[in-house]
Image (cartoon, rainbow, N blue to C red; front, side, top):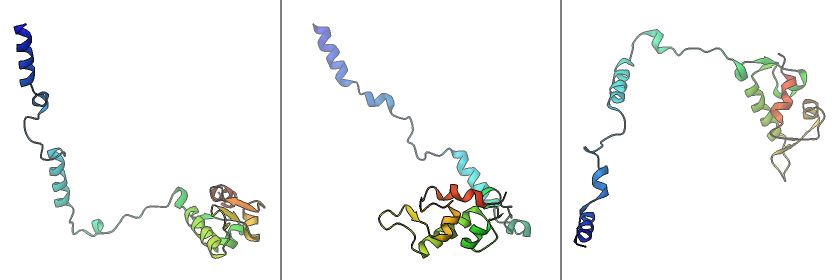
Length: 140
């Protein structure tokens, strides 16, 4: 019975946090070499060469590449060659300018005559369908 009282006394002096304490205080979570790499990049950044000052021109690809459009889409957006992203912006500007969104549900477009030609004769189109219905109007 004496050993049981010793066990309880020993368990009271044990602290589980003492086992998991770090040996040194943590000052930052970033590895030290990252700070050194940032300092090297910052020192190398200011260059006086004209090639470094001029931004690189990237050629447009994918959605940002201008494409020829059908006459029906050209009537709405106003140009013969346009990127898909810009065509969608201009189409939405046309829809908002002519107040063609359904007042009860703004996600639905009520088509006028120009949009009926674009959207295969549909009277009403959901906003998620617009990009899909424009695909045939871009010449590949």
